[in-house]
Image 1 (cartoon, rainbow, N blue to C red):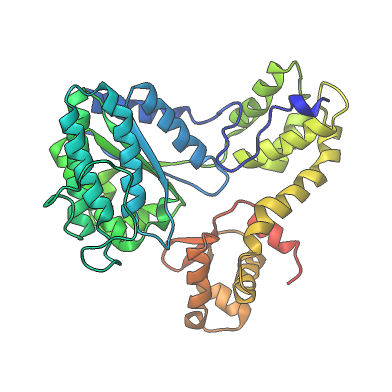
Image 2: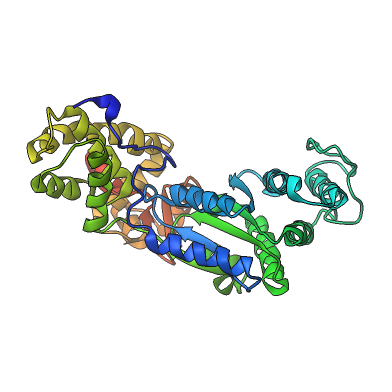
Length: 393
């Protein structure tokens, strides 16, 4: 088999050649876009799921859908050590730049850019009246709008003004936030408040977030009305039909087929997780001698695929953990079925649950485990427990 023609694409946020099994989510977002275009009230949207199920791919696809409708779009990736003020400013700057050439009143664009510049330059960590960063916007910063220093007030005013620019053109603006669970607590509160104001005023600006399974609880802890503020979409592994399609369709475009036994073996190995489907499919293609790809090809190639996953997908995350955090994760893995009780982890380690809180909280911040329900924890990465059970304690 020619490796140059290999269609499979295991990568971080890299769109697979066949986006299988996500029709429901794509249709939901299409409805959101259409309702906003018609001036109907609509909620922003949040996609959640484990790592490797395709959240970033879906977010990028949503962004493309909005751009096809001539919307202004911007995207950020949240980080736990950084406020969203400047990234949001940069993303909305990009969104309005997409709209500006079609706007018939340049002064309206300049007015908004003045507000955007004032918002971006107001840094609570800087000395009064100064900023560590000045955006490349060739207009003077506005005064008295989105520059109070209170992110909730400023973000609300900025969103309202951005939505007004979009209204002039009869389109919308979409702000996409990846790794949304990493937005700082006070920033999440401000973001929810700004979205709440937009939902009441009907402004054509939506926020589309993607994050780990506990993101809804993070939003709910910030604002009690967040469960009514967003349209939630939980994505998981693919069913058998979708997983087979993700393998078959790209291969057929290259004139290659799989035997049914090969598809059975691939589904058993990948369990329908999109990243694993691509990873096992790629190696099976590379090591197969000819079409059709057989179950024997899958059997021979599986160890290489597992080795690549152990180094790149699992190992890189494992290496980020401290020895104490690794002990904690090994204890979770030894229990088996997830989620597991924190009290049970403490019992295995022979420690009091309270003494393990620093390790647990650090692992949550690093995105290695999550707690969607009080007292229960689970890995954010599929098959991570299986990987850990193969590692020396």
